[in-house]
Length: 386
Image 1 (cartoon, rainbow, N blue to C red):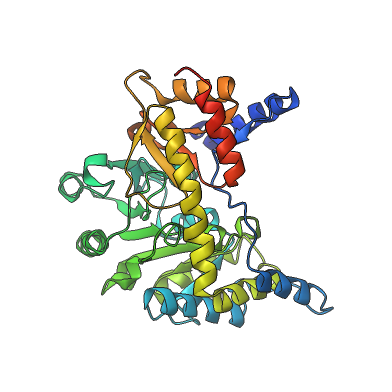
Image 2 (cartoon, one colour):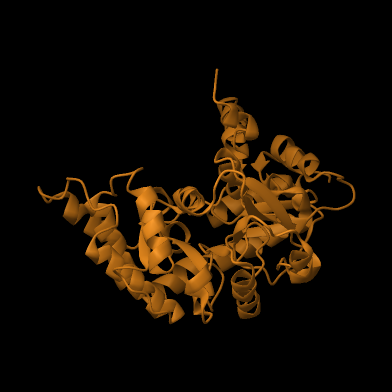
């Protein structure tokens, strides 16, 4: 019999749905997937070259420090200084991660006991909830509203029972809605955390996508006392399969997370660490602008046309690598629309319910597809009588 904790979660939506898409493709349907946020462009050339260079070194293949190589730690601290103007001590205030999912696990293990509570946004990234439940920690949802720009409602938060709350998950720029980060929200979050003795964990992988002014919660005075921020190379550097991210916080929290991490993994391959350092140090402003703004802006224009042809409305100010739109009243549940799009137009888009009850009337289109694929998806959608 499986462990009882498996009863608390379901198979991840995309894991289940991609099996169906694979079967449809096997039947010759040629599904265009606009569902998952996996960048389809390569990292910078110097990043790849550094990986190859290190991989050819005979001494590069042994175990590496769980805490990360000095080169990577220095590069991560430099990244925060360069882009956010935040001073980070490379030796004590940053920890490499094998992606943010690992960070969610390690932070929860380090900060919350069984029976404690964690605040999770609705809508929000499903893994915040599923990993919390797997660890025997209670999920308490706080609602985000479109009318409020998908920012937290602090009056509602103050009215909640916050006893035993150890962590509050935030994610700005927000996924899936594209709600932008704001210093006002960050300042209120830091104040909220300090007054209620909890830790804000801001998951920040989208700050460069369609966004010319990236922000960090660590820019707020006092944030290191009560905040953790995750950042990731998956989106900003086109490296989702490399599994390189980071955690920034104060020395004490970093040491707690390292204590967990050192008992779970044995460090990332040296070639990946040094190539990641190369990307952090030497990717130019021009590279970032082309990869993270120009390219996605062209794709976003086509995605907007798809959304409009589906009868959905959307906020043109949203940022990030997705387009989030509200369905018409014709579809009481967004999955009715996404299933029609899949089976009648052979295009796979995401129903918003997987991100929480506040997403039930929304759909999400990924911009991680070539313009030609997006144009073909648009043509297919146009041929259907919606």
